[in-house]
Amino acid sequence: MPDMLKLSGIECRYDDRVVVRDLSLRVKQGGLVCLLGPSGCGKTTVLRAIAGFQELTAGEIVLHDRVVSRPGFTLSPEKRRVGMVFQDYALFPHLTIADNVGFGLRDMSAAEKHAIVRSTLETVGLAALAGRFPHELSGGQQQRVALARALAPAPDLILMDEPFSSLDVALREHLSEEVRGILKRHGATAVLVTHDQHEAFALSDLVGVMYEGRIAQWDTPYNLYHEPNCRFVADFIGQGVLLEGTLLAPDSIETEVGILKGNRAYDWGRGAPVEVLLRPDDIVPDPNAGLRAEVIQKAFKGAEILYTLRLPTGRRVLSLFPSHADHAIGEQVGVRVEADHLVAFRR
Image 1 (tube, rainbow, N blue to C red):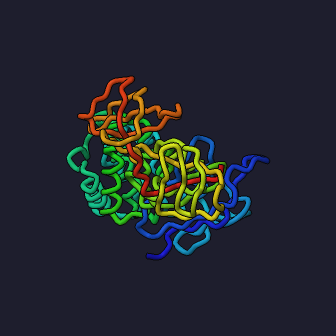
Image 2 (cartoon, one colour):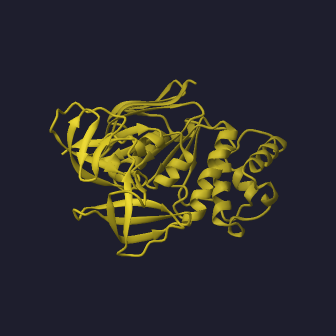
Image 3 (cartoon, rainbow, N blue to C red):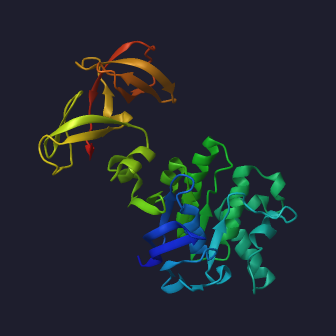
């Protein structure tokens, strides 16, 4: 697939403060990608730059083989063929759902406009609600209307700015998966900005984790979780702890929970002090294991229970147990380490 969007070494400033620096990425046609990171990392500024609302002080943005931004030149947003889905939906309260979706359609007959509106509402599963008004719809339905309005003019790119943040957690996760299906069926290319990793993973093919105006790692959700390339990504994605250890061989590390071997090789030299990332799914319950740990905290999550365990040394780790394995606070449990993805950092 050809590149739909390419950012090459872009920089954005607010007055004298650099908020995005030397950032590059590519999005293939039909790709769904996400910029993920904490507040203030620059992700929304990147989205504004792609949309044409933010000028560049370095680098360039190419959309469908056309330079749309570079220092001293910013093609206006309405000429970029970009659809926007906003955090607050931005629906017109006095217009019906059909009129909201058709608002951006220009220079066509009433019959053509009606056909596009109906087809787009069918795509998002809301054709039966075309005559209603926004206040008569749920938050999830309003979000799908906002997506339909963005899709209706057949833009080259859809930009979504924290689109699910006003919804409750359960609806947010469900709608993320639903929107992904809609975008894939429509063959759309989309860039999502969010601080919620569950949202990012549910919707995106590739995710860029941002830190201080840069992309720390651009990868699949699977690799971000299992193969983080720096401490920030390891800490920001998922849960886990860093356990001190000593490098015995490129693929072997001695720790207080035993010698761990994995799928990665490190060239820091024998005896190098390291920290090993252990996720909750790396600590496996085993009543027959020699390693015992004390339950000091538990969080019921339906199919699983997340336990905080204290090792004999006093250090804490996290472990996921099946939900029927209900252990009391203070109880000793047996565990073993199965860290197939051995992730370590120099201490």
